[in-house]
Image (cartoon, rainbow, N blue to C red; front, side, top):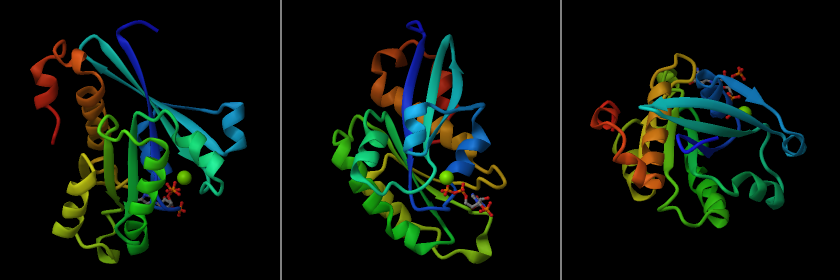
Length: 193
Ligand code: G3D
Ligand code: MG
């Protein structure tokens, strides 16, 4: 580990079957377990992103089931650098439940101005099964709390690299102010915002 390597913990939240694991595995290069994490059913996935001469390492935490106990949830959320909340456009309840996931997270990690929050509207390939309409309502809700909203399909891969670019960009913006100056302006202009 040196000063040119930066590691961040990213947690994924959201109802079962919205596509959290699929989004992560679409993107990541390595998956590993740790013993104590197995007891809570958590898998760690790593993605390394090179930006100029700097390596940003995202450790993505993925809970296998839903956390039933507060203690498990706390262990999962503690020390997060960013949270990605996922719902499925085919499942209205999963959108309604976004708020509950966010509140549970914020009880453990209250300083959210330092912790980027990203809302993901997944399964956009299933357009004919849409239950959450594309448009203003979701965007308005997202604008109140989240730093960014993005629509993805973990199945086709649409916008999946963009999701992780956004996470990386927000981490640099909110957590690494001193680093920004060293990075080329091109890096920032190359991201969709
Ligand atoms: P979870 O980790 O949030 O519980 P998973 O969700 O990633 O396990 O995904 C649940 C199911 O939804 C999986 O189907 C997966 O293939 C599917 N899925 C995830 N993302 C998408 C998407 O963007 N589009 C479509 N069409 N399907 C998606 P199975 O059948 O394997 O259970
Ligand atoms: Mg999963």
